[in-house]
Amino acid sequence: MKVLLRTDVRGVGRRGDIVEVKSGYVRNFLLPTGAAVKAGAATELQATSMRKARDLRDAKSRESAEAQRTLIEQATVTVLARAGANGHLYGSVTEADVVNALRSATGISLDRHAIHMTEHLKQVGPATASATIFGDVVATIKLEVVAK
Image (cartoon, rainbow, N blue to C red; front, top):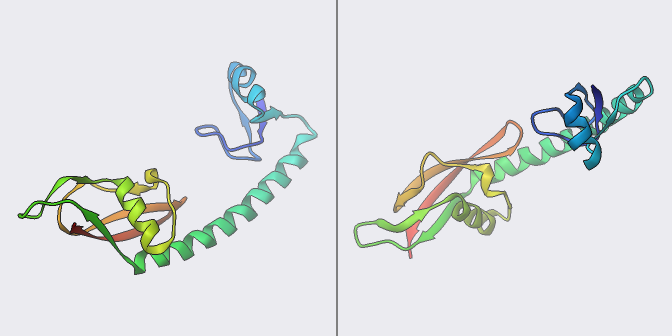
């Protein structure tokens, strides 16, 4: 069944797209939640205006993300953690700790799911992490883990 998406639906499409999906999915999820409407001949004009608005919004968001990326990459984020005498941490530095330290250092608030670390940090010293800010805009975060 062809539907016009009114919101972004993960795995299906983005706002303004006309997509073909199973009728049960449309009947049981997309229509009751208001995420889509049945597509017809008259919905093509509505779809183009929705895509145009989406593209304008994405362009503004990308510009904002680029500015945030430069701020993040210029800063060195200090994370305070309890550590023993040998520099080994009691516990570890997680994505949530990085988000809190980034917010206090730069004023930029990200979701912890946007932070990507190869593994949680367990030693005092320098480290790096990456943050997906918007789509393909990825910033490298320079971290300095310091003992309290």
